[in-house]
View 1 (cartoon, rainbow, N blue to C red):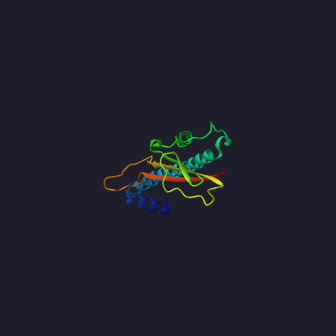
View 2 (view 1 turned 90 degrees about the vertical axis):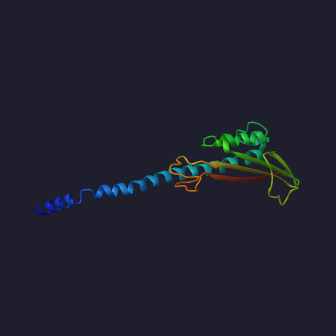
View 3 (view 1 turned 180 degrees about the vertical axis):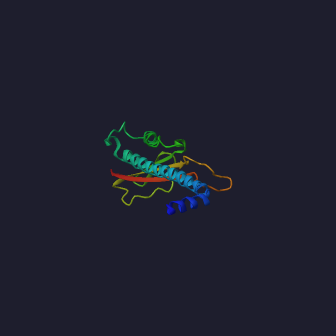
Length: 170
C-alpha cells in the first residue's frame, strides 16, 4: 500500500503538468495532419497530371487506334480528353495544354503554343507529338498562410508541369 500512496501523492503534486504538455504539443500535431493532407493532395495532382499528359500523347499518336478513342484526334479533342482526366482536381480551370506535332522537321501547333520542342533525330521516318500540361495546385487546407509576406505554414500554390513526347512511324 505504501507504493500506491506514493504514486497518489506524486500525481497530486503535479496536477497540471500533463495538461500543459498536451497544450504545447497539440498545435504541432495539428500542423502535421494539415501538411499530410496537403502533401497527399499534391502527390495525387502530380500523378494525375502525369497520367493525363501521357494519355493525351498516346491518343494523339495512336489516333483512332486508341482504346476507346472517340474520333480522329485533333487539338481540341486531345485537350478535352486531358481536361476530362484532371476534372477531379481542385482548380481545374488553371489547366494549360500545349500540343505540338513535328513531321519532317516542320512543327505544327495543334493546341496552345509550341516553343522549345525537342527535335527528332530521325525526322523523315517518324511523326513526333509533344503534349505539355501545366496545372496550378492549390492546397486543400491553406490555414495560417500569409502569401503577401511569402510565409506558408503548408504548401504554397505550386505549378505542376509534365511533358509527354511520343512518336510514330510515318
